[in-house]
Image (cartoon, rainbow, N blue to C red; front, side, top):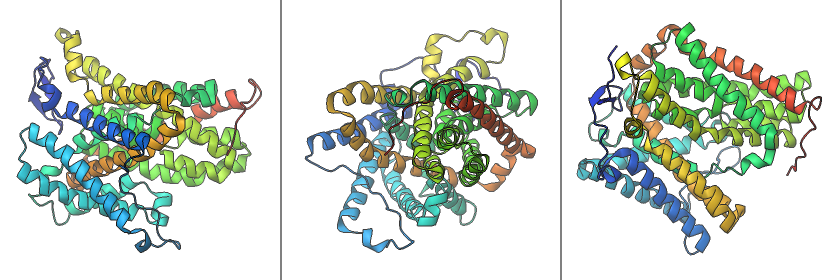
Length: 461
């Protein structure tokens, strides 16, 4: 296995490339990490200005759920096409400028981005269908469309310049940071903290030790990506930790695929089991919020138990989601100072080297969260911040769809098969998720059974 020295770092494909720990001023506009931060902040600023001033609508396009009596044709109005054009232009201009500053040919990138955006539109259209929307995340369809093209007709050369997974992921995560409000902690107090913030790190550490020491999986970025996807919130956590650990696209694709499959199973069967054992809405909702990976699936599963269960489930998952930035930061530091050093001479990694290797999107994520929580919310109120996030949420989703379609386009089934390493990643996920369920249940029973602590007062509806 190759040794990673202080002046060597993995590139986006996991191969080693020369790097320098010296930071240049031009890095602020010429590196992908910083460009993603600026793109995220620009979209946040324009979205906030539009909502607060009320002078213009910056909303991105969104397909409403269609099928089951809801017509797709009826939502394809002039207003929808206008928002779709706005979405394409805004993202197209920002990502094109970023590529131009990094020396990528604009003439090649613009048509490639247009083609990728069309694929993203197809993905969002499919994922909005009533049955698909109820049981599967958009990430599944983004991967499926990309994989279908890559493993059948192959990706045309003209489309390849736009296949830039990390760029889209990082920008989307910065935008997402604005929606992670620290005020969510107050809503469920110490109950949510005990369930989400104590259990989650323990599960990550357990899966890391089990994966690397017991299963002896050599691909450590895959292990940490699977661990965070299992313990936090599936796709978003996998994206953040994958970027922080410099995981390959195939690692992320595998982790998300496994997470999506089991999310669907848990979303359907966990409420049934909870009802069968008579756990109750408060405890059942908290268990769902702490163990089902996707926020959307948490909402659906909680609803199956009742309105109170849905409220508790979403609160627990929201508090858990706040950990994404902290975990990504910890993963970046851990991999820089522990995983990537191989010899005694590399025991000490300078602060400058840690700063250089630290994914800058994490900084953008935290700054966006802090601004939303401690600047915007006190000044304009929670309702206005919520309205801003409704606008930003779709730009985040479009960035993620572009990213996951890119992953599919850049992956073949042979590579995914090789990543299974005799089924070890699947074993890691199943064992980790069982441990997560048991530990979460113990925390839920301790905090919300009413036998040890008074039950929280919840306002439902």
